[in-house]
Image 1 (cartoon, rainbow, N blue to C red):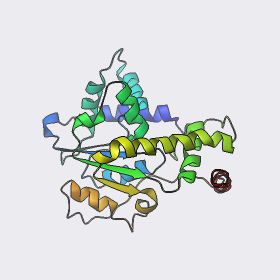
Image 2 (image 1 turned 135 degrees about the vertical axis):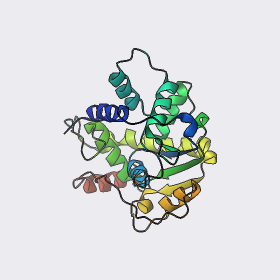
Image 3 (image 1 turned 45 degrees about the vertical axis):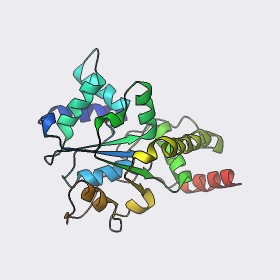
Length: 247
């Protein structure tokens, strides 16, 4: 298995082998806002696999940018130049570019004087997870192991997932949600919850997003190539943390 950074470098090298779409051929842009471990990668993968939208990933994530810098062996990279490169390499033949961005990535970019809303998105959705306790445990595990997908190599777990270990992750998720409600919710066209859209045979979320982008007659099936990360030991941790927070 490859580490997360190795996977990202591999992704950038694969991007470099793709044809480049002229930027004037891009006619619509989709932004999927989310909090981490809300199912946003799966949501984007399902949409991307319809081939109607572009390759929707966390292109605003600085780890992706670092992989691009390593791939190009550049001393200095202009962020806007990097995004233009990504747009050219990942936009679908339909002319639709798509990107998945977490709230904290938006905040980090803003601190670096980059406002992702300046890219002129035509449709913006927000994803959340109802069960913040399960989301907290999932986020803590992914961060401490640096394993963000089922196919990633895992680091050694540096600390046990105690209630005290989980608290900062819980606070981060709550803070992200508050920031979204106060500063970003008014910009969003639709909101969806993981517990609903993860059931591919039941949800209407994907059809609604495609319809908003002009594909209201899509009749194909929705599927994903992503696998759920094994998490058999998390149930007790989640239950204990839920009890700890709820009293």
